[in-house]
Image (cartoon, rainbow, N blue to C red; front, side):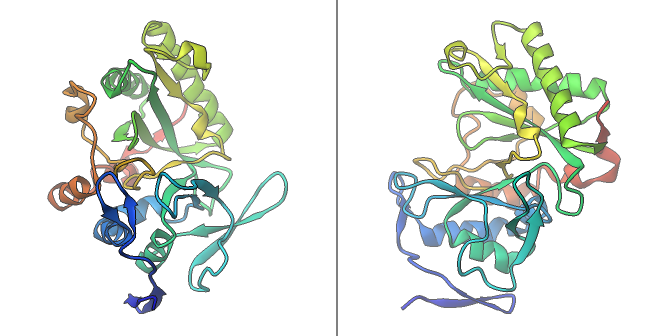
Length: 293
């Protein structure tokens, strides 16, 4: 029988809690749900008001992995649904606003991916993102070097960047912005990626061309496009082990000396949240919102 639990007054059927989703470590679906419940206070602000793309892996990372953007069948009527403008017509998507909705979504076994805008203003970006992706033999160490350069360049324009791990091989930079369309933010991000490549041509690449990737850091600026999404802070990733896209400090970035130095697992992040709270919470502070030139 599927166990029923109550979360803030909402009844939820949670299935297959003993199922091992990450065979490399034995991490179960029940532990996935426990992780999300533990970090909910810091995760929810990053999801709230943003239509979600789910990267689902119900049988673990070694099974079928697929994106789901439309409202899943059987979604409870108390989960917030938003109509999202699309060129082919509006789409209905899930917006996770509270703990019951988060636990329901986590029961689907999914990564959480968000756009750089909120549902109230889909035409205006409120986030700028860079996805720094290393091509072997480059690692997150080289990503950190590029991240520091981008931090200083953004600061010249009055924009403050905050780092987090991708939960895979690389690093993400996030910044709060206002007053610009996704198209304008994308153009600005591309311009800075080109500048980074010009400043360090042996280290940085602003194009996705696979043949040019080895040994360089690809600065992916394209995720600022309105139709694109990025792994949210604190989401688990569909990798061999339960790694997390974890906010980090600039000190950790500057001191990174090995590929594993910025790898964080679910247990690590839960402990970091208990000790430090949300290292990305400044993204929500009015005085730290930049204006894209």
